[in-house]
Length: 277
Image 1 (cartoon, helix red, strand yellow):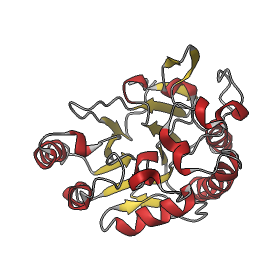
Image 2 (tube, rainbow, N blue to C red):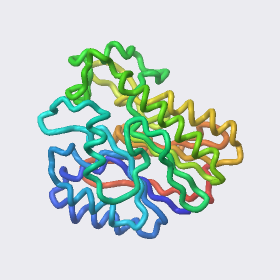
Image 3 (cartoon, one colour):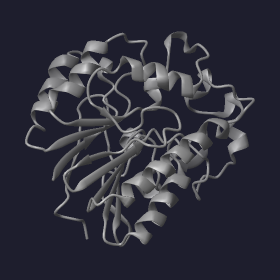
Image 4 (cartoon, one colour):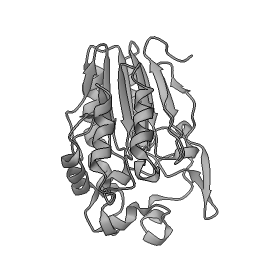
């Protein structure tokens, strides 16, 4: 199977998004499937739903997860992440979602000998090199991401993250129990530190824009228990601070962080018959 994976399209930033996206998708039609790791726009503030829908329908087989920007709402009204997720999913009319609700325990997708499992991967603040604790980011003024504008920070991040992780864990087990030879894990946020480069914001050094360490550990545990399966893990979110390279996380697990910016679109091709060494 030949798979194309991209992320962070942010189509409203392009002068002619229909043309840019059209040319990009056309260049991927020699792939058997396309997976998108979230962030279709700046948020649903854009109102360009036809453009987003065309992205999902231009390739005959498109799978996707949502990104944090896809949860944002006009004026950042208080629609918490799980409710914002449901609202966004109602707007998608094409494509195959790999996560249908916040904490979804059942959704996976199978294409031939390959099974897909995915998640937005909201941060859990457990990455080993994250220098400041989760409590630091609970304070709105400390956090360098606009996500906190629509979250009740008195509850902290983990009240949102924990049910998401439980749902992902249940779906991951289903994926590994399947007869598929290959497992593709698509997340928006990174699940391995090696999917990103180090970034410094406000003199604080940490792996760019967090990640979900727990999900990565779940993948490694399942992969170890199923050495016959080959596992690819791809993410986006951090743009130029993604790794842009394959990294071997275990004997049968590799990761990749997709680099994109606002001037052109990149993708990574995965050939399930050619596992990186």
